[in-house]
Image 1 (cartoon, one colour):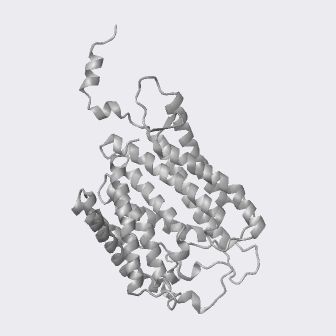
Image 2 (cartoon, helix red, strand yellow; image 1 turned 90 degrees about the horizontal axis):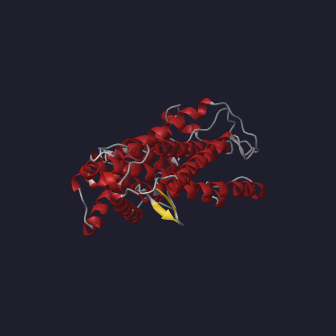
Length: 392
């Protein structure tokens, strides 16, 4: 005989507990692992190109990148199958509907990212066979690949966010901050050409940094249900980048393509990461003070956040870049003069700041950088406010 207590127990539960079923933790963890593979793989691939050249498509670095895409897409696909076909009738289903199928929003974004990544693979192989090596990181096939990686990382971020918001007790907040760090790491990789230590006294560096990072820091700081979310996110970014700087040179490698102007014997490390943890502390402090931000106050708050980011990062990075170009930084920890590819000939330019004449950091450059930082922070505020309430 059915127990008469069952409906009473259901009725006593909070409305959110009935309407918002918990999402299993393993899809979020697997999606985070996939995004981590992508971040590690892309930094490894850049080092591979700088150290060895392009010797084949299926290098270990490429395998790592596409394995991350397959993991992310597979997890998203499984969630779509589960919530469309395997969920018992009458049970609330989280997520959004796409052509009659239903899955969490993060799953759909990850599926799209995986499709873009896998589409870019033959495109990239054809591009190299037709035009040779990439001169810049952002080539047409790499743009498609980058959008796919953005989809995987953003999908993982949204999936972890949904779990954090549904639980309501801080569960998943740590993984959300970790995914925010991976999201920042991928953003940092794609602006490497503009954040080289030799460019950190030119206006272009501050403009690009202002466009790229306040959005990410403010979004995570706003949406993360954990103390010092932006600072923790920046710490994940720095630790991940530092580990690649320290670990890659441990592996022997030699160039396979000519001309070789810089004889290399080990994998080339990426430059020491930006000190984003310093402005992240300021952003966290301001976000804690402002609390809820009405729409009409958003621009003023974004201006303050952008100014904090620009002033604090500028003060830290201006002097730190001087050190990075000095002999004191030429060691395993800071990588210093060890970041140059096999095609970089010796010369004083390695220890000098570039573009000081054609792109000086003057008042006009600072104003534009502040505008970019404000716009980036405003988008971060709006997106972060939406993410705080998102449960799909």
